[in-house]
Length: 131
Image 1: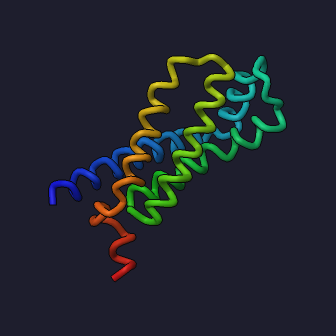
Image 2: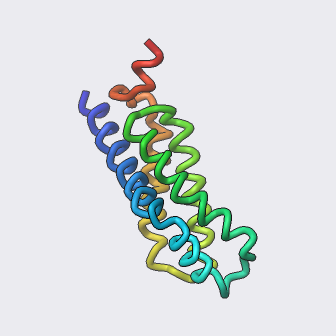
């Protein structure tokens, strides 16, 4: 029971983090996109790659956050969230923002834990839908 409760706490916490990131960016999506383009203006990534990612990122964070909080499609949501973080890590290294790497790696570790221990995902909509 304790392992399932701990799993729930971690899943919801990282879900809230993702949801919060997306939630604050969605109302100012155009400004967030402009900021991201400016951050990458001296990086090797062309605007044609940065621009769609800058619009997709807040939406992905928001949706993945909700799914993780609810425990719905937890495994695939965790995998997709880890991939989003890996893309962020790549971008972060290209702009040499070394301070942002630690939180990104921590998120990846949390997602890896959620995937590795998916059998502990008892308090989730995934479990209710299987019944």
